Length: 492
Image (cartoon, rainbow, N blue to C red; front, side):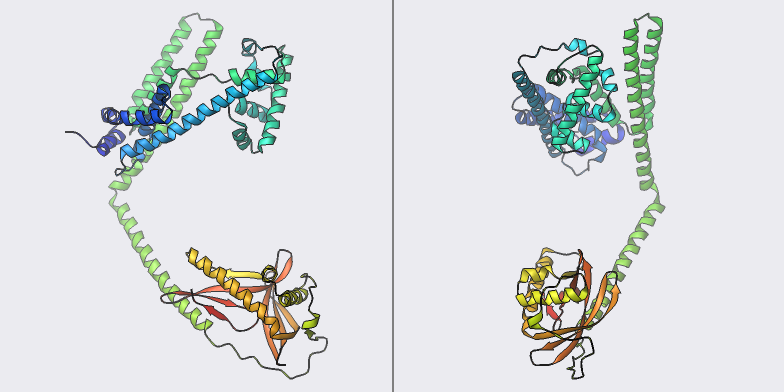
């Protein structure tokens, strides 16, 4: 009986069944290869490499793919991403070849440099550089990264990264000169661009791919022991052969390097397998422990209860705020008592901009801007104190913008009703805030006492224009508190 994709993928992820994974490869190899071939303009070799990368990725991520995910769609998306990465790599290679060709054209008289002379000492010369210079050279020439990516890796601008690479290359040329190898900076740049990065053998890629597939297929530590035993046998046989055969020193050093690489790979695989084992144990425990499930359900019930209480409290607070907002303001009284000594009214004809280094000066400057009637300047001389509600929408933002516009229009009408002002006193109302008490004279001769907040922001004192949301039963409203006149209520 033919099994569906989800079953095959689950068997591979949980049981490590390579037969199931092979069935998936047989089903979708044609789809992946043809998609890759289309996207790399018919390059069959590159398409084959992309196929290998995609199925390795499928093996590595088999555990994280949801059962309802369509395998065909997942593979097509993975093929698309792998093809884009391959095309970017090919583009960088073509750019490097073009750069080398241009450098040859710019310096046709420079003698060619023999790479065989530089190859034995180039790594030792790199060790003589500082860490910053070595990183710049390795990124640019040994990893063949464009200047944009080098700049990002070094945390510099592209121009600064170019200068860092040029200086590092010049220092490397000096180190090589001390070892008897001389060249110009451009010749050394061409040499490193063409020779420093050697493609890995195709057989090595196949070996690493097989190792990745084996590591991805393991679900418990039972498969770790054969893998470790196999690699240990390789290490033991290599050590015995090295001891028994009188190989030259250079061959022995190469063999030791290879063994160290295998040992590092073994450590990495062991760490990954241990992580997978822990995840598997945690997943099994969470599924099998009834008490844990009961605890989670209890937490969910408690969360829902708390959310209900919060909703009820918000509704009560909204009703209280709405009642407070609509409570009639205390009536203003016209005063006929004599004015306090030293506190004179300043008539509208004398209003002028006198700076904003003190609250008194800032308020007079604010009135002078109001008298000029420029809405843009009025907006820049005040401090908007907007108290947003939760879950702000685009409609809410448009309402705030409209309220600010209406606010400014109302302020522009204030000079027509106010003929003079006088500041009475100030008290601190918070950090860098003062409550200013003042009196105004209206066009009909009445004197009105009022107060407002001023805040010190951006190096200047500014009148505070407060705007806040009020929650109601079925809707929300937006209330503003201007400097002059009663509160206005704008329904959303």
